[in-house]
Amino acid sequence: MGIEDIRSQFPIFKPSPNGSSLAYLDNAATTQKPYCVIDRLSHFYAHEYATVHRGVYALSQAATSAYDMARCTVQAFVHAKHLSEIIFVKGTTEAINLVASSYGSLIPEGRSILISEMEHHANWVPWYQLCRKQGLHLKVIPVLDDGQLDMDAYQSLLDNTVALVAITHVSNALGTLNPIRSMIEDAHRVGAVVLVDGAQSSAHMPVDVEALGCDFYCFSGHKCYGPTGVGVLYAKKDILQKMPPYQTGGSMIKTVSLKEVTWADAPSKFEAGTPAIAEVIGLQVALLFLQEIGLDKIDQYEQSLLRYATEQLIGISELRILGQAPQKGPIVSFVMGDIHPHDIGTVLDTKGIAIRVGHHCAQPVMKRFGVSATARVSFALYNTMQEIDQLVEGLIEVRRVLG
Image 1: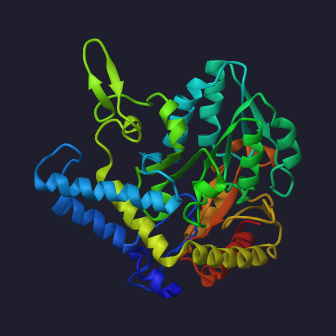
Image 2 (image 1 turned 60 degrees about the vertical axis):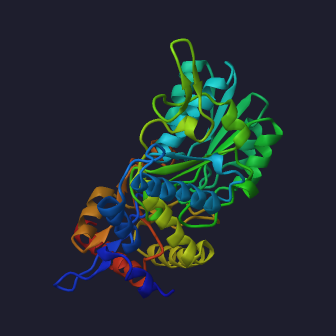
């Protein structure tokens, strides 16, 4: 499938009546939606909508079947061993909070949680809160000048006090692709479990949780061309059995009486209330869309975009890229001399170029590099070399107007 064929499946990229089109380069924040996802959501709400797992009538049974099939698709997408290891959540943030609240409650006082300096706030603040609540110690892996993790420091921090390592697969602020598999192996040697924040990897490269060996892996639907309000937590079956419920209410119980309440088995135990039915079904279509194109092909194409963008951007006067690790996801974060990133984004917007500016919910790594904010471009399967040329022309104009 060629790039034009791919772009034709996204209505937002249709040229406007005056011939202008959007160069959307904010995919690390959220991705645009193909017709197949939009149409599936619309059709479900218009013709198939009913609640799931309770109704004996045909409409409810059909909705239940569609919802349950989505879990099978997610299982195959991440290569989980058991269907019960797939938990539907609102997104990566809720997934991490679920683990921090539920599994975290089992960690004894005095133990440590190990994270990195490059983590998104969603993989920092829940652990900070847990440590304060339970008398745990929060330890942080530093970042080197090129944006890689300091692996020597990781080895020294990784002692037998560490109960859990929470690490991003790909940094949303720097693009760094971390050596997850070896980090997991090292953590397991000291008896720690590992949570991988896959928000920036799941739509860009094949993910095999069994091969990685991680204990938890999570991602958001809206970053994978699916709807907002839905995400996935993968967790090993034996770990889920030990974990207490995150929320209580309907659907997550086995029995309720005045004297006792017993919990349903996973995944139901962690999915209280009426689920995001349409969003889960939309996520299934988005993941099938990705699988049809092929995650390997997507990775190769986006890496070519990353290489080309990096080559072009480093030629712009006073532009400095933060994060130049040898292995990266399709993200480039940069500053331009004294020009504020918000001004860069504003000028580019007048030229139909959408980028991200700010601290990217990663203030610790901004502080590490001595900046308060950066401009960030992030690529997806529908972006083109021509859009990168358009970006470069826009940044040259930024330099002319504001430099």
